[in-house]
Structures are given as C-alpha cells and as structure tokens.
Image 1 (cartoon, rainbow, N blue to C red):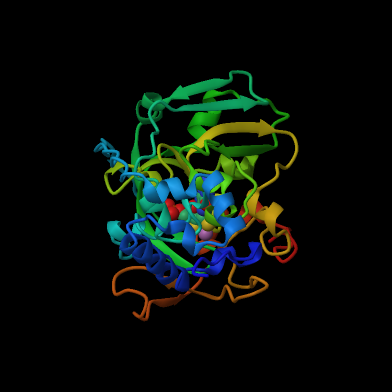
Image 2: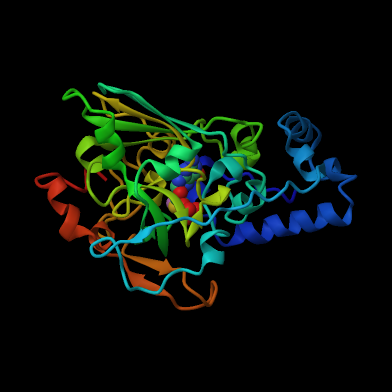
Length: 342
Ligand SMILES: Nc1nc2c(c(=O)[nH]1)N[C@H]1C(S)=C(S)[C@@H](COP(=O)(O)O)O[C@H]1N2
Ligand SMILES: [Mo]
C-alpha cells in the first residue's frame, strides 16, 4: 500500500516524507500508463476513490495553466515590509498548504493548475448596513493595490518571507458599513468539489469538513496589518496560493490566512474555524504565533525559514512573539492568558 492516509491530527506536520511518497506514486502510475492504477488500491478503497473522481484526475489530460496577470501597485513602507531575504517565488508557489487541492505540499501546485477563478463573487454580509458583492474585476480595481513583504509562519514550524499584493481588509469592511453588533468576522472558502478534488476525498483532502472556514475578532480584522491579498511577486495569485483573493494575517499561524474566499460575514458570535473543529486541543481560535506555547506534539520555539538551499540547509531561526509584529499587535491581547487562548 503506497498511499498514506494520515490520521486527522497528523496532517499538519507531513512536510518531508509525504513528498517522496507522493512522487513515488506518480512515478508508478506513469510507468503503468495509468491503466492499472486501480490495482494499487484495495478494492473498496479503489471504488471509493473512483466515486470521488480521484482516478479521473490521474487519467485526465493535464489541465491548462491559468495565466497570471501582472498588477499595478505601490510599494508599502514600514511596518508593512521587512528586509529579510525573500523566499524564492518558485518555493512560495510549490510548497503549499491548500488541502482542497491535496494535503501534501507539492499537490496544490499540481491540482490547482486549471483552477478557474474568473468569474468569482465575494460577498460581504451579515451585520452590515451595506452588504457588498465584489466580482472578479472589483477585487483588483476597487482598492489601490499595495505590495507588502510579510513573514508567514506555519504552525508546522516552517516560515517564508512573501511579497504580497493586496489591500487592507479594513478598507473593504468599512465600505460595508458594519453595525455596532458586529463582533467577529467569519470567512469561507469556495466549495466546489468539481474544481477542488480534496473536498470530496478523504484521501486527498485530509478529512477536513469543507468548506474551509476561518474567523477573526473584529479588532483583528480591522487592524492595519490584516490584508486581503490578490497577488504575490508582482502578479495575480496562482491557484495554489489562494486565487483570486485570500486573507493574510501575519502575526498568526498560517492556517488563519484562509484562501480563495467567497464569503466574509460579520457576526455577533465567535465563528467556528476549520482546524479548531478538527483538533481543538491543538489549534485554537486565536492562533497567535507564540514561541512560549508549544504545540502538543512539537516545539514552537524555532522555525525553519524557507529561503534557498533546500531541506538540508540550516535555516533554523528563533520564532518571535506574534511573528515579530508584537509592537503592532500585542496590545490587542492585553490581559489575555495566551496559554489558555492559544
Ligand atoms: N482554504 C484553505 N486555506 C488555507 C489552507 C487550506 O488548506 N485551505 N491552508 C492554510 C495554511 S496551514 C497555511 S500555512 C497557508 C499557506 O499559504 P501558502 O500556501 O500561500 O504559503 O494557507 C492557509 N490557508
Ligand atoms: Mo500552516
């Protein structure tokens, strides 16, 4: 049995071994000309996968690459940039967590290749006086675009430095004219299993109950560091990075930065969030980067910074409170027990 089905709670730490298992499987499928793919799977499992459309993926022609468009934008200054070495574009776009397109790091780049994000509709709804509906073009034209270079720290203890292009989430929320009853913001990713093969396959999608959902407290959502990104490295987002629009909250673990958003809803209650539902003792609602609070199964004191040099390069650095943004955001959490609200 070559296919590893990780237990739910193991899913976030599978960055090294899975790639090789995955490549091995591809190699075998290729060698067999895809004809005997079913033979690799046990009977019941194969039937399930066929039903979920997985074998179709292996057998279909390579989807057409969606062209990226170059964007016009201004460059931001401090505190929205860092002079740390940026993660090469090729790594930003080929080492991804986007379980809708597969739970292994290399899978989103492959399975999101033909991801169609135009047309697209993003709703802003809930406790607002002026609900909004932004179409694909409005995402790129309604607000001035700005390049911000942020650190992204995954809860799995790796990190990148990424030049995002986008606009403050606060600008969008203000246009919707929030009611004073709005205390939280709930986000939802597209649900479209035809395009996102992980959404109806436990094997690819890691057992997440889709659609992927996330949330922020209202003051976190309105914070100037919180942005909606529509691009990176000067171009629109590739599918695997959350095209056409995704959240970026740089002081929180990466799983808060929800991709391919279709709904932003202002609520009175704290909304449910995907990883918290899956493993509440491991992933909290707040998920602020915190070297003093370890994950139950690994330390959060340091991280592997992905720059150049590959897996064996010694890129281990200390993790900073709030991912280095403490001066800007620590006062959002004054008086809160960060061990309890992890
Ligand atoms: N819809 C959705 N959003 C998601 C995820 C996901 O699986 N699905 N993964 C999260 C995690 S764990 C991380 S670390 C970041 C990764 O963003 P990147 O691939 O652009 O670096 O996206 C986050 N947003
Ligand atoms: Mo992550």
